[in-house]
Length: 418
Ligand code: ADP
Ligand code: ASP
Ligand code: MG
Picture (cartoon, protein in one colour):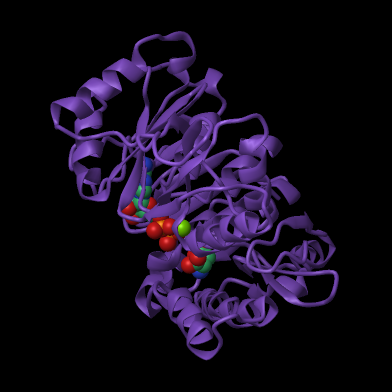
């Protein structure tokens, strides 16, 4: 039997009527002759509610119990979806992660897949079941504990199942009808893309586009999964939505194909560190040891290059996820107390946002950065930090200009035009 993976996100299973709507999409694929693995998220808002319960109970919580609590949202939807399919006369059952079993690492809250043995689910298909409804976002550690994959992780569950079962396609049903040139909630001029290359989707996701979890795109790229994003609220067929695919499948190629943003970034500046060999390593070593994910880095000669400093000094600015600011501060204070580094002040600015342009066309085109900076300058938006790679340019700016920056860049690179 040909097999499909269909994933329904939180808003697509937000209540019983929406679960029924999703079940009808599954029914249509079964009628076309497919066996289906359905991956479900928790009902929308549910995971946030569960996280709130954990944080309201314990400040420095045990991550194993966090996972035990937050994984439960998906269990409810999996059972309800199986019941709804049974009501429609379709042989279906639900599977929690441990029942499959979905084997993961023990990194609670951000676990990674080790393997997904097919035997149990295959046996049920062989018995005549048409649909396996699997709870997304969760797995089982070697210690026998429930794990979760990080927020948005059901996308990754879906792609992992598509790879493990050799699915013909992995369809991600959500509340938008595809991947857009930028978040359609920010810009009304955002345009839906028919296709997007894995590399571009990977950058967009990791730079903030929440439509797919970054890890799901990585897995799809590695295992050559045909990955599609489409709407659960509209009538869809095999041409609907956006296909995430290899770049040589794409005819139209623009220099920039999308704009992403993230509010989840804070700027930290170490004021007046010594300008000598080994300083960067003395700063970023302890940050790495403390598990801080440093993203952008700039080193610049200090504006405060005066006073009692005997030698040359410099400022070191870097960005970290907002929820790691406290950890970064502690790592720097400890490093100073241990005599590894010296600085006058550590300034944390959480009122910033990161805005990025992404496109594989940048590899062969010059002037993209200049065009980006010109568009921002025309709106009087000051750039605080810049980072570039082969196919992306990111800037850190004042948070209040974020939407304006996204719109200005979308206009400047003419992304509304096909
Ligand atoms: P789900 O609950 O189905 O997983 P998410 O909220 O995680 O849905 O992802 C869908 C949302 O991603 C959309 O509602 C949209 O606001 C946002 N989004 C951000 N960037 C993009 C983009 N480039 N294209 C489409 N959607 C985007
Ligand atoms: N329910 C989880 C979350 O909200 C996983 C997901 O929906 O992908 O993050
Ligand atoms: Mg999601």
